[in-house]
Length: 286
Image (tube, rainbow, N blue to C red; front, side, top):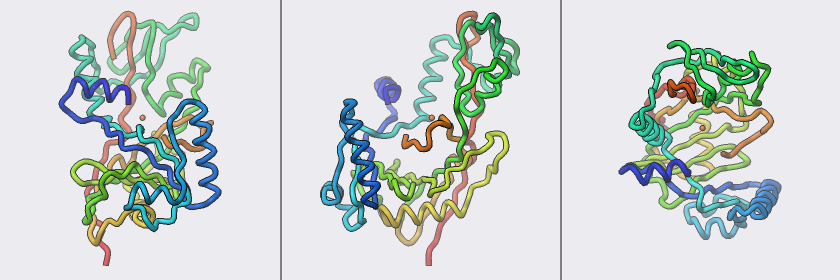
């Protein structure tokens, strides 16, 4: 969000939306866990708040009758348009004289006396005394030869952009169903983003997994989001966005609710794109 704010000051594009995060519980046990988490956050200076089952529909009438037992909320949370931020960073780097090597793969780190001396790439060697590894789930092949490790594993993460027949309710925060592992938020031009693991958070090999969209998952997550949060209406159009996206995270974390220069002094190695496919479809209900 700091990067988004900085870029927003230099661009006519809107890159961030502070709509708030609302973690919703359907059971008393989950509500108690959320309340405990909020107390911990407050003790660390985070201005989140716990909402009881009466306060939730009072603030957001669209959630009346949804049966939530409690929620954790922070109004200053939100989302950022990472594509626009990356575009801004690239433009700024080029303007500053950075030599951006598009389509160049980092093959290995070159070391001497436990100090980095260069990066071997498909475009040749880049001599440097420092490197920023931004390769996500492909970090292990670069570090393993030097007996270094970062506890990162890849997980499949699918998202939908939907165009509801019924207008998405205004002024809703990002809705996160903790018990059901499904979430949704508003997007541009009346659309909505929908995602979730639905209780199946699968780790994957980033080089060997199915790139096809999971139609069963799409229908299941749309049904779960409608049951919990909002009505999509009788006809729904959706895009499979980042359908084969690889989400990285430390393997020591079970769950998270929370994504070059050629120089003699510094370089940054690029990771491979992990979200590339896109497909449009319709979901019709009788």
